[in-house]
Length: 502
Ligand code: SF4
Image (cartoon, rainbow, N blue to C red):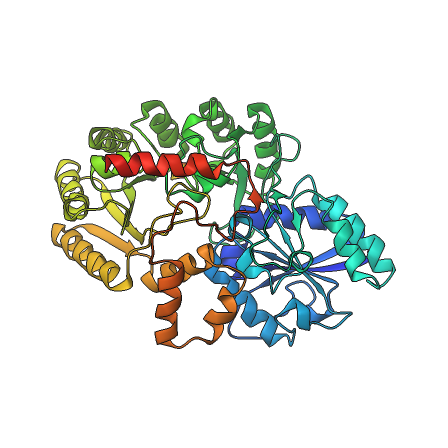
């Protein structure tokens, strides 16, 4: 018998279906919402071709009690705004009449700096949802019975649940004196993060995704996940094996997810056990930090054909300054082992526009790839280039972003050099999108409102104010009120130390 839901929830991933369904964070929260007996959740994805309609029953956004947004990449918020506009939902919380759906958002971008989104969302969740989503839903259900009569009272109750931030209760844009603690689950074992729905239309087609670890021990200076992803936690091997068995009942394709898979003690046994059951395995977000021959053996056994390495900078000097302590010889060792292990493709991630970057660092990217290409002719090289974006809560939050014209020059120089090598595929992230990402990462409560209406000239002004200037040590940031266990003074010390070495 179909259950009668007491609360309807529209769950949005503001990108197309294939990307949304390949996002493990989206899948996990969908499963949490769907598992509540009194909640009926329906999925929404972004499309320019038609008005937003739920995937399950084709209802419009307006018909739901709760609209929940999962935001992984800052610029996608503009797609969410388009979805609200197309659904005739007023954009600003203060303009939505009583009886409108409640809007809540979560995800890594919102958790790092919630302020840019504070005028649009009624509630922002900071951190990992597993342990607090049910108390939130219970509170919502209680107040819904009273028809949200006392919205303010509801908000007061919500902020007593860890990780929930209600911007309207803190109207001061800088939130002076207030701290909101980000939530982090202690163990991944209680509720392993895995695919709730396996889809043939997802980017990872028919793949059962399982997260083996969260947090990253390396803490590269520029990395948001490294600094704000919390303690490094691993899913217990026995639990991973059991979950994989369950997943393999539906598909033979398995995707292992994590930021520190090479540090997972026992990944070889997990792969062996899954292969014995007929699995085809991929490592969706693998970063090799050194020539780990045992891990490459595991990769070879798993049937994976491509390995991903993220040197980020071309020279060892710059890499070490950024906390990415990998020597060229280690990368070459990984390439050699990859060749020996029968892997055929190598993807290398580089950033440009980095702090302390000199001309020779840019040249070093080209010369490194050139030399590697000569030494490892059997490997196909894919080089991914992205502009550096100074992210909140990293030791580089004080540095300016490189200007658009300089970034364009550097990118075209890199492309020209890499293409001249031959046999190298280059993919480049859009510079405009990276600048938009930077504005949103570093913005305050007014930034999106401005971005929605500015002329090209005014946009330059915003960039000058928010991203092109170096920050003073004493400067307060819009995100200072997020309590994620990091000490701003310690971050600055680290920045200063590296600055002195540069
Ligand atoms: S860049 Fe990779 S290795 Fe470095 S902190 Fe981030 S996730 Fe970890």
